[in-house]
Length: 346
Image (cartoon, rainbow, N blue to C red; front, side, top):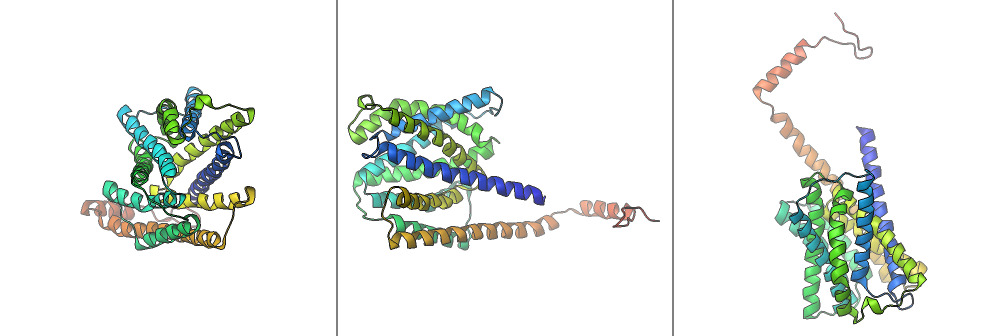
């Protein structure tokens, strides 16, 4: 039992480490690919379509070679999930374009309370005061180190609301689909990736044209740009797989809270690799965010122990008189054994 817990803990850490490393890696690769000082590939939605196309291809190869098994999930649920996920991607891109960076960061921070409320509405989930307190600390910490100027306009506000609600719903749906159909994270991703890839590759160029006024067909590809697109797509496979793994293992709230560790990593790497400014405010915000994450981990563990304690008395009192009688009879009829040697006496 103890060894199983250790294996589960190691696999949880492995899934989370894969998510953090691949997410931070893809941000760094995309920064080089999409920035004006890099390759100026400003087609974010189409690039996401490429990501899902490569992920779908990996899933197809995996199913064909027998590495993963395909389980049945109704097509309407897959389509519903794909629509929500694509709304999340498009909403985030539009929010970033129409809003200031400060308001964009605030909208991302609001996902934690939105996920909490949605899980309470959809799954009647309750949270302890310790968990609520730790979430507040994380949100304040990340807010301090990321939020700068805050400008709001009507279109940007609507896009941010759509992005936050759809992203929160997407993350809750991943977990509920995995539990509902007893399907693994990679198997679920293999089913949703082709639908998302097809829709994003068809609609993506038009969304990108609306965002930046350029068609991807007019972009002059270079060997460097192709290399970074391939790198971005490769990292996206690990990022997508690890996201499904993490939400399957943790809750959507935990995924959001721990996800802010990536923000801290990105800020630090930006300072180390791209000479980004790292102010005292950034550092204090990072420290506060990390403290909040530590408190959150402690609060979740405390909640688990509390639930176990509440369950045990219920289990003890749930035996019927017949079950108690059978247990007594069983105990009386068992021959007395020497504890050390395991030999029957008498």
